[in-house]
Length: 401
View 1: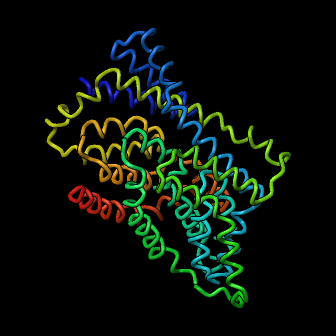
View 2 (view 1 turned 135 degrees about the horizontal axis):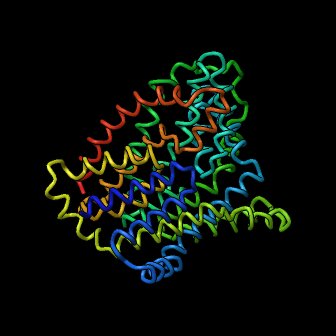
View 3 (view 1 turned 180 degrees about the horizontal axis):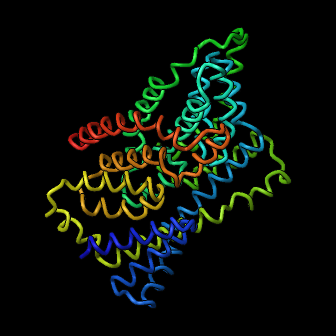
């Protein structure tokens, strides 16, 4: 019965998403469905979600997202990501490097619109040597690699919070898979681009290196502080914001509007509602009962959850499947640890590259005037090979942990 009830809740969330409703509305419907199916009662449900909305964990998540968005606004104001692309051209003088690294660097900070900055860079790098469909794939694919593992992304922070996995261990364990993604994209598409730009080498590579460091030091410093010193995300990013205020000589007049623009209401509301949903699920006791339920299934539990995360992400998007699936997966497989999270987050990453729920895919296909189907066709070969590689890698991690 627990599995049937959870399936009903999952289907309800998917159905509301299909009605083009915001994620927080879909998850709220999941809360209502869970309360009804498990006979929690209105007053008790209100008590749970009220406590969840002001819990230290929820507040910490909201502050993390707000501070990261604030830092992003500062970088946009000083056009630092554009400077990073120009620096790469000076350092490597390679079309291939520009096509891969510019979208990756631009993707270090979470913004759907950032993919538009990468589009002309990849367009120029590819020139007439590759089709616009290939350019669409390269732009989208490399822009999102950082989204698979960096704790500047809401989905990563949320998954780490819900799973309890150490942030540093997760990021370090994901680095080989990030490298695999780079290599696969290169083999299938980037190597079609000639390396030569036809331009003379930069006469001052030291200056270019300095400019590159200047353009992305805030992001790298924040990530370093978070991973090495285990400081909460919002505190580490706030420290960098204050330092960047001085280094980039921001005036109060420039910064003041950012306090408002950094407050992305939909993201914050969705985050709060996701944490409410998690607490309601916990209250039902279903999470504690799941290990016994999955123990009697003829299919390995890890295979079940891998398929759920892959298909669920394609249908509903990353945040929805993380909110619903991470607590359940770690309850069903208590010893999963970092190996399980690496597997599931890789499933989410690759599924998002073919998901209609992924807004960036709509933006990039519209920009290059290509079709979503063409993008999916180019992703499928890499998707299949990556799934094979991550299956073996996560199993090796499990044996070593």
